[in-house]
Image 1 (cartoon, rainbow, N blue to C red):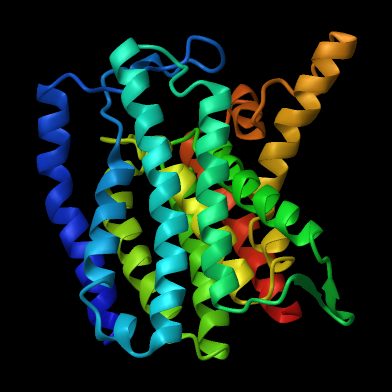
Image 2: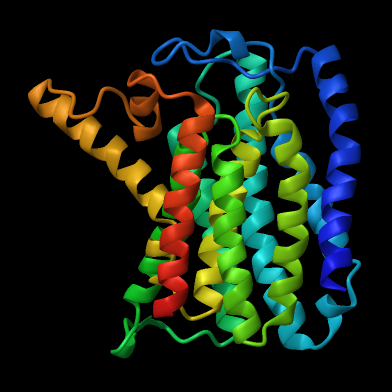
Length: 317
C-alpha cells in the first residue's frame, strides 16, 4: 500500500507539472531573480509556484486514503499536519503571488506575514492540545522537561522558525527538494517505530510528490517551488517533530536548515554593527557558488551532509 501511495504522489505530480509550467509561462507568471548575489539571471523567466502542485497533490491523495480515517487519533494527526503544512503553504502562496504582481523580491510585508504565521501556529497548537501532546521537550537520556506556559511560546518559535529556515534554504535548483526528501524520510522511519501510520502515509505521499517535482526542479530547473512549497515543508517538519515527541531531533535532521539560518543571522549582525561580511554571501549555499562550485556539486554535498546527520539523529532518537 505504501508503494502505491508513493507512486500516486510521484506520478500525479509528474503528470501535472508540464501543464502547470506551460500555463504559468503563457501567463508570464515567472519568478523574479534577485539582482544582488550570484548571477542567476539565466534563470529569469522560470515559473514559480511549483510548491502548490506537489502540495495539492499530497493533500488530495492523503484525504483519499483509508489510513487517514482509521480512528480519531489518525484523523487528528492528519488534521494537525495538514493545517500546519497547508496554512503555511497558503501564506507562501500569497507571498509568491504578490512578488509576481509587483515584479519584485519582496511580497508579503513582514508584519502581516508574521501575524499570519502566528495565527496558523495557534490553530496547530489547538489541534496538538486536542491530541494531548505533552507540554514539554523530550530530551534524550533526560526524559520530558515540562515547560508549562512557556511551551506555547516554544511552539510558536518552532513553527515560525522552521518554516522560515527551509525558506532560506530554497536558493538553488533542487537543494531544498532533496533535503526535504531526506528529512521526511527520517521522520517516516520514526513514525513507523512509533506506530503512527497516518503520518507514515502522509510522508510517503509527500515524498513521492517531491520526487515527481524534483524531475523538473533539478538543475537547470524548469520550475521553482517558491515560498508556497518552502514554508509548507518547514512547517510540516516542525509539526511532525512535535507529534513524535522528538522536537530536538529536528536540530540534527534539519541541521543544514539551521546552518543556513545562522549564516544569515551572523552575516546580518556582523555587517550591521561592524560593516564586516563573515561569509562571501548568505545564506551559506551562495558562498559555495562564490567559490566556484556548481549547483549540482553544492546540492550533492549538502544532501550528503543532511543524510549523515539524519542517520545520526535516528541513531540517537
